[in-house]
Image 1 (cartoon, rainbow, N blue to C red):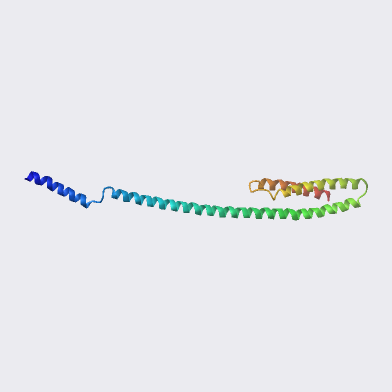
Image 2: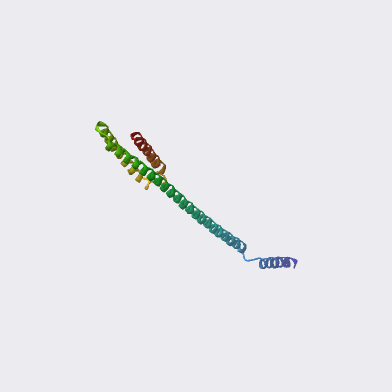
Length: 159
């Protein structure tokens, strides 16, 4: 009888413990769901961070472009003002050449023709400032500066 009671008791205890437990795999399923939710939250936060970074980068790029455009326009305007002053000097040289006589008059007109050709080349290069990009700006500005210095020196020597 103890032999038959012991297996029944053991069966009853096991059956009771199974009934008290949750369904098999329910804990694992809950952990998996929590992990999925955490992953989805992490992805959402990452996407938001990326969007914020992209917005900030776009603002920085727009600001840099605006600063570049402003600097380019200021430089172009400065050169235009100086070119107008140089044109006045060329006008004065032209008046001197008109008043001169003989060989000096011919030499001055030849020099004026050279100066005007150099000025026209400078004006053509100044127009490239409008299409210069940030990547080519330094080289373009340096070339225009060199041409300006050469033109100004040539006009000053002719005065």
